[in-house]
Structure formats: structure tokens, C-alpha cells
Image 1 (cartoon, rainbow, N blue to C red):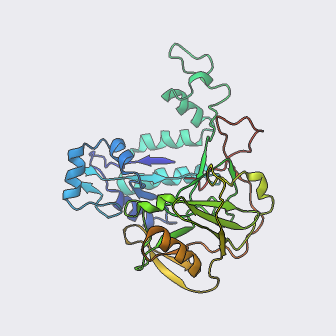
Image 2: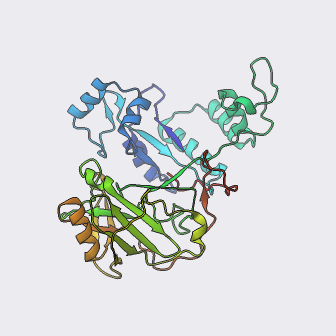
Image 3: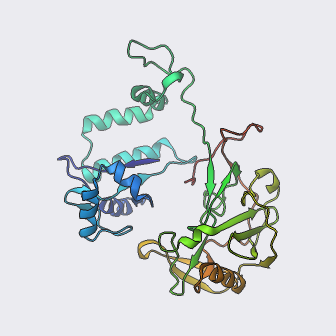
Length: 344
């Protein structure tokens, strides 16, 4: 993942909205993410914004998810390019040339040198050594302690967090299958709770969502919802099962085993599609789950709302290789290689 701010040759900031629009005009279009990536605090630190800068941006009308990308010459967010398991060096070249051609950021000499480094199979090791990332993995080297890396820099993904329902509690997993049709973690952010206006509820405005803990059982094909203040849990059918899911160690629903009555419901199949408003007015198509789940969430949160599913999986082929993580406190057997494509 590469997060950056684009500057013109004179040092002027290019707003992330302009970068996104230009990326859409590129052939083929380039998909990227812009803004503060749902983390305004880290965004403020990364951009070097003071509290006064943030207040100034707010006074100018900037809110999360809008198109106000520059205030008084300072960016309000950044641009993020994501590379995954299927990305190639050609993808990296396309991004460099995109920035060069649209914003005149790179001089011909620098462009040629950068292209040479990208084409070099040892570019990642060279850049790691130059920035000191290699550390103890660096071999010998000169007086500067650099030199080529004998074994490269080993990167290990420590944790995977899955959020089946937007703004509800997450699941920490050791391994998880990828959705073969989207290359994302299976079921990650596939559900949301919407109000009567069909707007997806967010933790910022509905803190009660933090009490809801989903528990997924892929082999049984169910998702169970629990909340400490509710007298009953709710189990929904996912509409599919994953064979061999017992090996994934995924049922992390909390420390206490549920001892309450469980109601079994299922998504409403083949009907009640709706347009749901997500962030900053963005719309997506979702499928309403059944009335039982609507009643459960309405009781849980204290006002009329319902569960919807943004991604319908009627038939799921055999899962592709799983994304994996290695917990520092785990003494279990070795995990398989992580597929970072789509992992957040």
C-alpha cells in the first residue's frame, strides 16, 4: 500500500479529488482510494496538520467524505494506491507514468532512473537498505552499514481482522479464505445496518453498534449475532458453506459461551433489493435480510432499523488459498503464506 500526496513541479499540492478524477480518465481507468481512509487522527498526523489547521478546514466546510481536498494550500487527505498478489511491475510503471503525464511531477532524467530501479529485480532490497529498513538482515556492507541483503527483509503479517457488519465488532482470525470473485476477504464488510432512510449506520453516530458481536461459522454457513444487553442471540444463514472451515479457527465470538436462546433467521432471498447510502452520499445496492433480523437490531439499538447485505453469494466455488497471519503469542503449527490482495 502506497499512500502519498501529489505535488506539482512548483511544489503546489494537487488535491486528491483531482488525482482521482484524472485516474478515472486514464485508459484503462486506475482505481484508487482518496481522503483520510476512515482514520482522521492518523491522517492529521501524517499530513502534519495542527489543531488550528483542522479547525480552519472545518470552518471552510470540509467534512469526512466530501470533495474539499485543499484548504489554504494544505491537503485535507491523501491518495492511496494498493498492490496485491496479482499486481505486476507493469502496474507500478503505469502509476509512475500516470503521475508524470498528468501532473508533470517527474523530470525525464528521474523518470528514466526510476523506471530502471522498478525494472531491477533487486529494487526492493536496494530501497530497503538505503532507508535502513533492512536492519539486522543486512549483510556486511561498507562503512555506512548498508550493502546488499543476504536474505532480504522478511515481512510477517501478524494479525487479520474481519468486520462482517459495518461498524460492529470485528473478529481476529489466524487464517481466512478470500472471495474468489472479488479477491477480498470473504464476507468482510458485506453487511450493514440501515435506518428508515436506508442510510448505513456508522459508529460515530450510533455507538450501540459496538455492542454487537458477529460470530461466523463458515462450515455451518451461519452468522450468530450477540450483544451483552440482549436476552437472546440471533443466527442467520449465510446462504452458503465452506468445506473444511473447521481448520480456520474462526469462531472468536468472545470469552463467554452464549447461554441464551437462539433464533434462526436467514437473508431474504431473491427480493427487496434497495439502494443504500453509505459514506458521503455514496450509493450501493443491497439486499434486505429478513424481518427477524430487523426486529433484533431494532430492539438492540432502540430505533427502527434493519440488516442488509451488500454482497449476495448464492453459489460459492471452492475457496482459493487462504489469507494467513502469524500471532506473536501463538505456538501452533506454521501458517500458510499471506495473500495481501484485498486485506485492509
